[in-house]
Length: 454
Image (cartoon, rainbow, N blue to C red):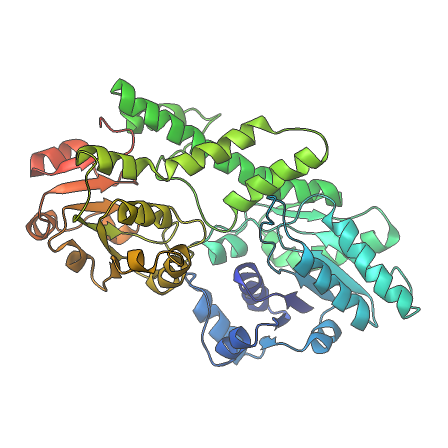
């Protein structure tokens, strides 16, 4: 099938590459000329395991192309995926200007029937706005108003495992309208996703608004579990309980399960923060407050300061002249995404208290440099106290303590003898509970986790 992907960012690239992998002829559009140049020269502007190899394979086979030509992109695909960014607006709502602009471009150039797929994470009612924008352009050209049909097909990709999630989905959600055009669109989507349903049916068909809400509901539920566990971990610190034992105790209940029950330094990334905020904003627009989600957001923001408070307390609220090694910059492992990353808050707070930070991350350091430059824009002198190193052990040299923020696998079993040798003091502040407190005690390491007898 001929497919166009509008937006060659995280969702667009993964969607385009994976659909090409299934034999489809995919045209990826982006108006960022630099991004298109990178992709056409064999590079990939984001880090995602397995994505670069898949793109190379399908470009070589002629099934995947990248361009900034809007007219060509509309002409190419019978199915047009809108996968552009929906950044948070100042009031917390999703900014739909890029989604609507993509819809208008389709309406301006379409000459044959098109299925328009909202792949971007968008609030309930966005499909109506997309349809209205397309119809407005079709009317100007005196073309049939049912030439294009809008479908909601939200993505459920985990950064760091997006290719695997797309190729082996646990569910595919497709929202269509019960109209002749909607039924034709449903059949087109059924054909497109048929290869992913060979073992068993994974597709859930529903109305468009329900599909739009399903995406937000999923991310809001996961974010809620994270904030809930962070609340319990903070309480465990106060009462002397071990949150790891609590996690095992409640996770073994089949009604609860173990997923997203790991306490830490708060969630970040491109999805949870903006989606929780956007869902809350949607509710307010309809005269209702989602009090649980407002609390989830508040807890998450506070959690980003938890390690800083532990560090501050341990050193008697005087960090001037101290040096901290920081392992992990990305908001989670297997990605270079620095959006809303807790490390950004931790670094700023340590520097604000007069400390120096030497950081290491396996893949996110280039992105981190851009992010921190923005964070310290009003304090360029503070940025001079932040450096990065290509080796995790180098970061430890002469540091007063090690601070772990991201749970990269390489951090799970380090050479603790070397860690102790490099550090000025054998102290670890573990924001991901990678190590057992008892084991650290045996090694002579002063250990501070999240909810683990601190």
